[in-house]
Length: 208
Image 1: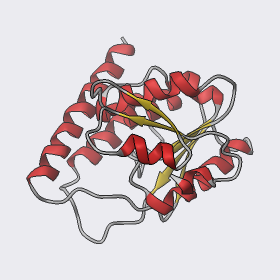
Image 2: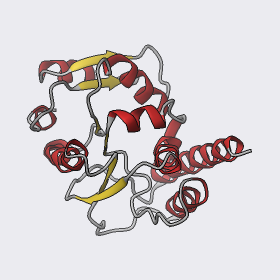
Image 3: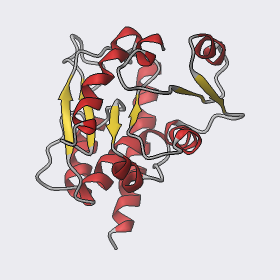
Image 4: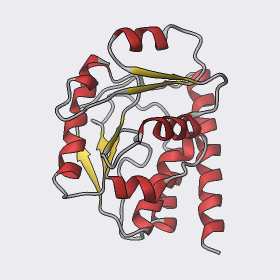
């Protein structure tokens, strides 16, 4: 949290507490962040939607960061830079290649295919599921409302590309808690696959 607050030109940090059962809200508030507590768990896409609706009062750029980045959240500055300089409408963080494979790449391949099919055919996404993004005010308008669940990133990228916006992937050394090849990990990736597939079906219907 402190790392995000220390990013140059960040004027406000809003933490969306998606009905967590731990002390997320208390710790975020103690660190100096504003906190939006949701009464029930609504999933990633809807939580992001609620957060943006709460915090976006002007025409400022928006930086989206997951809550498990720890000190590497400071690299959000790498994402904000091109957007604030006018060189991109949306930036997406690329993470270093993991030392150990967590899954079999099925969700990643589906996401990449979907972005080419429903976004722009010549955009080859290497980080289609990355939630670490900076968006210009115009990009925020183009990608909202967000898709539900874990399909939010694929839909976000596809909508931005379809709108003719400049989307740029940025190399970082960010680190987060990766899922493993255990039951919890496979359940998580199963939910991801279902949400991404649902988002792609919605994108397909939009083109009809």
